Amino acid sequence: MLFGLFKSLDEKVKEDKENLIARLKDSELKTLIIEMGNNKPISNNIIKRQKRDQSFESKDFPSWYAYRISDELSDIKFKPELIELLKDKDFFQYKQYVLRCLSSLCVNCSDYELFEFLISELKKTDKEEVITTVLSRLNKLRKPATLNIDYLKQLLLNGTYQNRIDALSALQNSEHKDLEEILILKLKTSDQHTKGMICATLRSTGTIKSLEPLEAEFKKTRSNDLKYFIQSAIDEINERENSRI
Image (tube, rainbow, N blue to C red; front, side):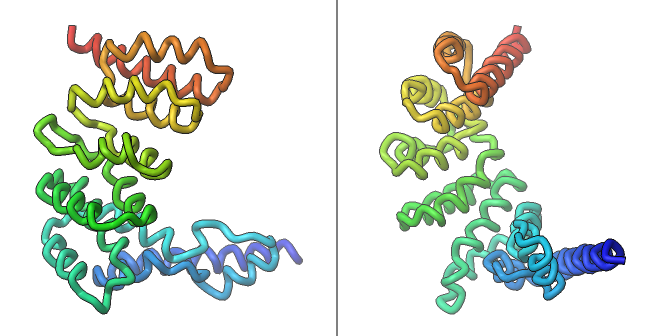
């Protein structure tokens, strides 16, 4: 009997989430952005389930779904509307979510003009949360050697710890030859998480030059997690180099 009751509540929660997704996908851009900052439980059913399970999940909040839907934005016609929202003083509290939507357009449309615009906006702030919101989305953008990534390199070299992690993420898929030397030097850090992020970036940016320092790090570390990231980078670089032969 109790099992049936719990299942019924879970079914209601599932339905509430499905309804939210449908509503967000059909909503205006402004509504989607507001929901990106909504960290209240989706429904009373979720609150009831929390009381039963004594825990919330990230998927219990509108913000989780709004972020995922915003990541899929690919219609460039949204670009001017989003840029206008940045100028709206009444919408200022949602600025980081507007920038996130613009970063999704940048990646999904390979819009390098928009990349430069986003960087110009980030230069105006030192708020780590805003910088993270944008840079965490730019990792999948291919960055040709002609693209100016000086801001990202400066964050990597001189930024806060979080800035450096975000820069490493955003520098993935870059084709700038000088970046590899910077990453190899940064491998000397004692911070394991940073080393892992460097390896993740070298997966898409490293050449044969990176193999020796990566192999040396592999021999030194006792961390199985770091060994995985190092080996992954080595394998990816070798595959890329062999494809050029």
